[in-house]
Image 1: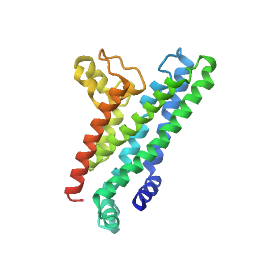
Image 2: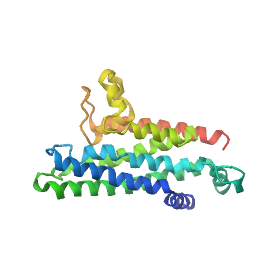
Image 3: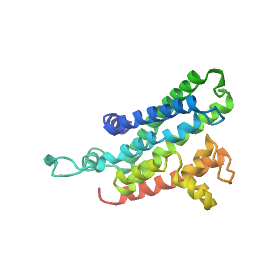
Length: 242
């Protein structure tokens, strides 16, 4: 618990973590305002905006470990923060687990806040034309929150493997645009439907690629991808030099 509290405290002090919260709230809400004012509401109103707003979760996941690999000042002889962190918490497994749980907690908070703000905005602007918040809608909101957490962990795992936050962030943020690379690939290669982000999106929004994947199945596929990545990241992190 002490390691987890330390990692949560460290995460709260990172500028990129606050940028992640700002992006996770402002981007989907801004898009929700535009779409509510310029287009007719549909079954994916609110949810499609959350698919793009996931970039906040990605930044949060990358920041959760990427800051450890930035070069410190001259007083530390150009060393990296990870050396200091491992001195404080020698067990690499415990450290990585604490960081993973910290990212999950922070992303859940961000996702819940984003969902509340986005759908509050949609209902404020559309009134009675807004999507009904029934049991199915609540289940889809849970799927959206799960998707955000898994995308954060995807960024986290890739950053552990590459020891660089720029590359994973650039790839994942670019692929979270309105038209993703994986979506374009799925138009020609059906197997691309089983890539983590495209499979996971089935948990809360409509994906028209000609291949039907149930929401639960899509969530399980994405979870399997992320679990495999985190296991690989854990093995590499525990065996290589800091």
